[in-house]
Structures are given as structure tokens and as C-alpha cells.
Image 1 (tube, helix red, strand yellow):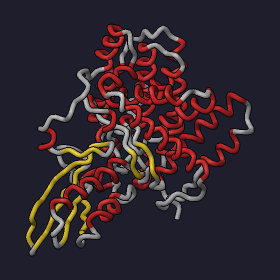
Image 2 (cartoon, helix red, strand yellow; image 1 turned 135 degrees about the vertical axis):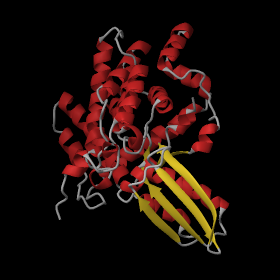
Image 3 (spheres, rainbow, N blue to C red; image 1 turned 180 degrees about the vertical axis):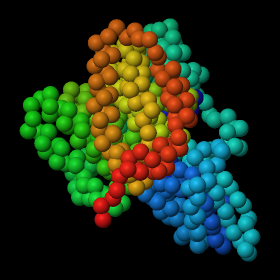
Image 4 (cartoon, rainbow, N blue to C red; image 1 turned 180 degrees about the horizontal axis):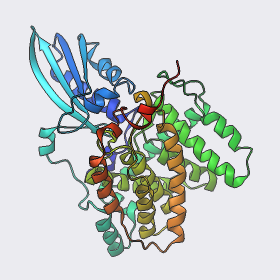
Length: 401
């Protein structure tokens, strides 16, 4: 299993699959063809279906267009077998194609194709299931964040400190920014008004309202193309920061403990990424917001003193109740229902934490089984409900002119 450094990435929104991955692919292709006279980029499947709303073309053109004229071709009806987010990059010189490169944006900003799949990733973790890691915890008398430290090395804390600082800065920007989000849906930012109203409520209601405000702040920044941290994706980037920020602010938790909770969150996200998928185009929103909720629940349970089995239970419960969640963005924008989903998932993460903490940690279905079911459910889900913006809310919502 790869490092959690590959899961937490600082980038611009609104979508790690649709902006970060394609931009990275464009940079890699350009490095091989700086003398090209022109470029041609064909987008396939889900990447083409929602690419304009997700600013995929803008991300690619920002790299290639300054060097040579670039033609964008959209083929949403063609889904390549490897992954729904397919791209074909072509470099042209003297009227001939010098290289044609097919690559896929597989979630969280990562790239892959048939050739990269054959190359073994740089694995630093020997165990790839939570069940195995739990046994390790029991044998060593340690918990999840210590497993991360043992295999990532002590410098993981410097990395996670940067991640946490970025998460906090995104929330603070989002709480102060107002206005209408780009894209044509005329969605107004709500984080600042939620925060103002939260301060007038009593303690319990105020805390929950602030949690919503924090999640909205990051999700709205993401929708506007601002800087966020993939956790595990851009579209689900509001959940983990909101939960950790809420606990840190209300409980005065030391930063060192927040970073340890972030390490645990990363571990649970990594398990889902390794054994299933965090790509909405591949398994629906259960792989994005569902996994984000599980990550946040695990982190919260650890901060509230949960045992390793209670932490695993919180994560399992959080993901289990998002099974089957579709990815149906209206107009292909990461706004409706994505922004609200982040806020609701943050609240559900705290509920899962409380439920698990009240228990003795024993339960019937473990996290690994839910991850497996999530993957099976996503693959069985019709493509209409996996980020193509052709079904669900996307189909049944009419934009008012």
C-alpha cells in the first residue's frame, strides 16, 4: 500500500479527477513534446460528460496552449475499458502524429493505464486491510496513527502539518468569502451566513451549525477553483477538515493530536483507495463522500479516546450508510448536491463516532467488508449514476434561465 502522501494532495478545485489528473497528464506529455507544432486532446466517457463543468479543458489548455495550438475533442459516449475517465493526448508535427498517449485519471489526481498497472507501485505498508492492522495494533499495543508513523517515518508529521495548515487556511478563506459560485447555476456561498447564525445559538446547536459552516467553507472554495486538500478527493474535501477543525476549536485539542487523527484518517482512506476506489466516475459518490465520512469518523473517534476497535467501528458505520450513493452533479458542476453532501457527511461522521464510542467496539460487519461491498456496488451501478451528469438529480433538475 502506498504512502498517505499520495492520498492527501494540495491542489486547486473543483475536481481532482477532472482538473488535477488531466493537468498532470498534460504536463507529463508536454515534457516529451516541447517541439510539437500542435496538440490534440480527446476526452472520453465521464471525463468528457462533465469535463466542461469541472474545468477539465481549462486545466489542460493552461499547460499546452502556451506552447502550441491545442484542439479539444469531447466523446462522452465512448467509454474506454480501463476506466471511465479516459484521455488521448496527441502531439503533431509536420501534419503527423508523433505520439498518441492514452492515460486515465483514476481519482485523487492519480494517473494510470494498462502499462502503469503492470508496474508495481511504491508500497511502504506491508498490511493492506484494517483487519490485519487491528491484529498488529493488538500485538504491538499500539494504535493506527503509530502504524502510520512506523512505516511512513517521523517526517510524516511535517507533511501532515502542512496538510493541516492548508485545510485550516481553506476553511478560514471560505468563511470570509461571499458571492455567487462560478458555473451558471447561480449558487450563492452560504458558509459565512451559517457561521454568523451559529454564534447566536446555544452550545449544542451552535457546534453543529459551525460544523456545517466549516464544511461549506471548504466545499465552496473547491467549487470556485480555490486551493483545497484532497481528502480523499476534491469533491469530498470538506468533510475531514470540518470535523477536525470543529473538534480542535471546541475542545482546544493540541495540534499534535490533530495530526495523529489526520494520520488515522489517511490510513482508512488509503485502505479504500487500495482495495476499491475513490473515483466518483468508477464507484459513485460513495467512494468520495462516503470514504471521506469514514475517514472523518475514524479521526473523531480517536480524538475522543476511542480504542482501535471503536475507531474501526466508527469508520465502518460511516461508510456503510453511504453505500449506493450516486454521483449525479447538476450541470456537471461540483455544487449541487456535492456541497450539501459534504456538510451532511461531516455531521454523520460525528454521529458515527458517538455511536461507536458508546459501544464496546464489537460489531458484525467490518470496514474491509464494507469497502469490498462499496466497490461491487459501484461497479454494478449504471453509468448514468457515476459522474456522467446524465441521471439522478442531474437529469431531473432544470436550470432556470
